Length: 110
Length: 113
Image 1 (cartoon, one colour):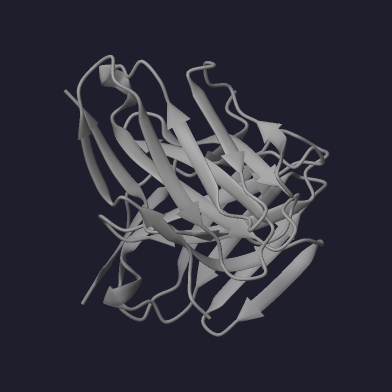
Image 2: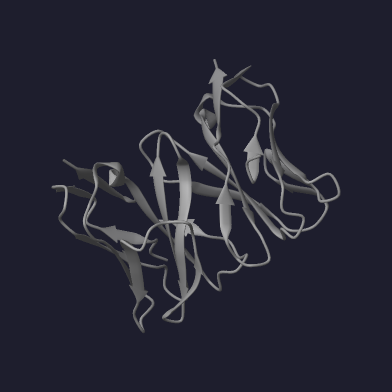
């Protein structure tokens, strides 16, 4: 079992729809959770961080964390073609070591 | 505020050689982490430095090493290069590390022939 698993892609949604990206992790001691967006040929860009259970909203992005179920998700509302990218889930355990998922590639079709 | 910078951006080396990559973190950030990204393995954690000390280490052979200077700049060294070391090497800086938000540099694309 991978330490951080993301829903297999690619994921395709029409423009204006909600894109839902999911991530599960195995280390119950994990305390910090992040979502990065990576465009092809570019480095990852931090878009959301979440540390406690519940929802965190930032513009069109909402991160959701459920530590009991060991999952974190990212919702993108009103998806735009510019949101087409690979989304990486990152988890940091108590020891401070970062583990990334393999990423989910999102395509938003006009 | 200037972002994370990495030099060089591109590098071509021959198997058996060694290479040194450099990373300058965001001003005020004291933690620098290094990652290797390949299509097959994804983003893999190499090590993290905080205040000139290696605080965390991933599962990479001893050929991969790093250091951090008093100004928080960091270097990563790979000795005895192998073809499989061809990858994008990313540096990320954080205020404190250990769970804080990390910001990535543009990366160094290393090709080993």
